[in-house]
Image (cartoon, rainbow, N blue to C red):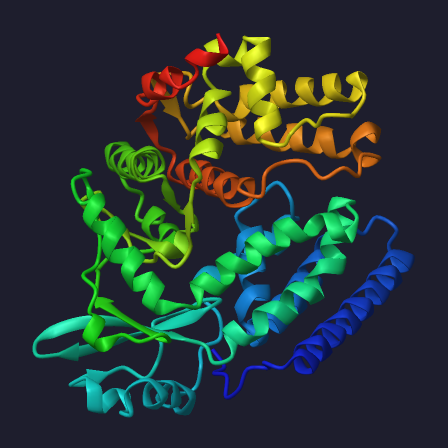
Length: 444
């Protein structure tokens, strides 16, 4: 894979990259129309593959938040064509790495030493490269380390990247630009946090310590003395990424064990810590042969405000879901319905949310759940298609939903998707129900 000697970091450089990519996409469409002229039965598969490859290559050179967006989209198999999902999923851990001189420059800026002066051995070739940084293997005093190095200029480019993406988001979500600001600010704040390795170090140690009691889960040890704002050093953990692990054809018992560990990890964080490892994509986990789940990245952690937590989990409880007064209260608290809109519109959205909640809360409403049943995720995708094609929804330009939905929904959708890939059949239910119900007594 080609190494990168530089990354476009200025607003002009990154905007120019966008324009170049748009030109390539235009050429791909021209080729597609020529093919259709010759053969009217031609489908969009080749067009999608060409566009996905050109867009991904461009984002890979830009790194940072735009590549992170591609990574996030690759997790939602119901939004993009398969060709895009396949290509964008490489952003999880397999993008073009930085060249040796750039790696050494980051080290000298952080420690006034080259990597080989800081460690006994340092493999200059990255073992993994993703959207924000890349990982190298190193040793010192008989210990083996994973050293994550942040790409130069990533933090400085986030604001301009958000401004570049904003026009596309306005069209995609059919909202006035000003109404998108609170959501884009949420994304921007999280992306900036991901570029602060001092913060990631603290978050990693805190959550790993709090979750160490969960069976069949493991975390690296972190080393502040070899870490900085742009470099994060942890113990080297053995294991395989999800795709490679599944190719070994693990037993159902092992699949269930890993899936249970993953589920317990997220439920404990959500209800006990009131925060979430909010980036559940395959590149952030390693899977071991004995069924141990290794969590290796805490760059994106979402704190859940108490009032949002209360409403988000209240409305999936049947007693709340079926109580009109309590149900309406929590929908309003979550900013899903609004004061001042017509009763007809309120009823439309209440009905849609009920249908959506019946689908998304299914794992909570039974003691066990089989994520290996592909019909479940398909029902969610089908519902999304149905809503997207409703004229009443297309014409509604009122922003809906708390900004906290962005990362909390992303987390649970990503979790469901991972468990579906693993084909895990696990214990679920609502062990947190009594605590949440106790805080709802005032509504009954």
